[in-house]
Image (cartoon, rainbow, N blue to C red):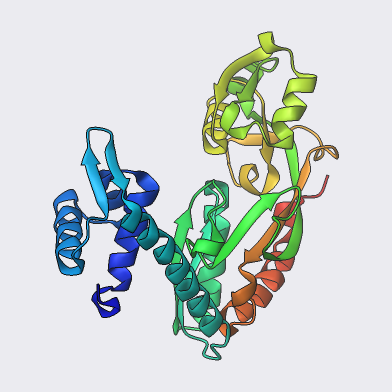
Length: 292
């Protein structure tokens, strides 16, 4: 076997097949079709002269050579990703692509923030990844994350931006009054939120009119008059159909965090975007914690 016969694409393919135990799973991870992955694996095995995986009804099982190749692929690709991050961390240009991830409730704010930054730095381009799950920044799913959370994630470079208030909201007018004693519950996907814990403690199950698994669904149900909802103020205050019932709840609050990989925190575009974000959020602080 010649070491020069291996490319990074070959290594990525071997690692993906070993991880998923199937060609279909590997193809999905790599963003290629099944036939493409099949041809690439066949060409690689023919070129190297070894069988890397045994095919069976249960999937693809690595041979001894395949296990050796998969372990080497993991090491090489990890080192390559590290090199890429370190080189980007030394980039002194205010240009290039910034991948920013944020939850769906922050879309309006993040779009405005990126637009304001791009107006000052037109050579920077943004890719917005709207996802409620915390993407793995170590794998470069994103460069920067903007996240509401009670505590900061471990192992990453973080900056606290602003406190986030949560309050009780109800539909305006007769629509809201019709179900004033009813509530919108938060399902399993939102069970980690302090708001879900508050509802569990303060609201009887019989009072729950509807259970939802996203905050946009909770807001929509509240606007429709199905019941009261516990929502982040930065998200609910923009709705013309809702009114806030009282001040933010002191026991239900979180923080807005700016998060990036430690290797990227000194990259010029990341550093400037962090500082710009901090100033922008301070200017809009009343949206995240409105007056009583």
